[in-house]
Image (cartoon, rainbow, N blue to C red):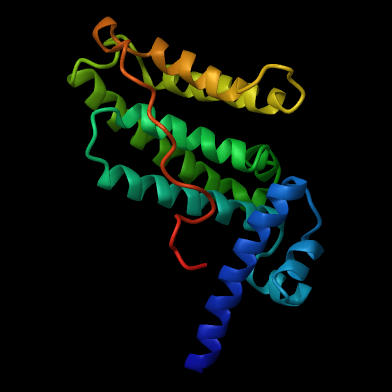
Length: 204
């Protein structure tokens, strides 16, 4: 029985990694048969773990939120909000359209609502910290930060067809500087610090 549980846990993780690879290569609407094939598992095994595409996408989204939570809890610098925006945009760039496709599935709706709420709390905490430290404009709201992320997401979608080099990086740089107080304008924009779907050295 214990061996069966270990096999189930391993199969689930293998499917999640395979899904991230396939969706990264072919988009979030790629065939689930390809996911099962990449994981070297049958379709039946996939559907035992994930009822449909929405459940699988919701799991990918939740795992990335766990990365953000863990990162925020360990962060010791003075630009947490900027760093979180950069990491969130890294997720959006890594798997474009993931959230939009997931929202079409009833099976994903509850989990996505939870992720959205948790992400909002995380960003609000970082925003309040930055405003307290005098690095972020005092009139900024969470809605402003979410709007910035949405605008950068739009640039990510356009970037593949744009002749402008480093378009996403330029959009991030301009957007983050617009959030700062005058005294913080000259600080460098932080670099992305971890990769999806798992941190380097995770062993998967």
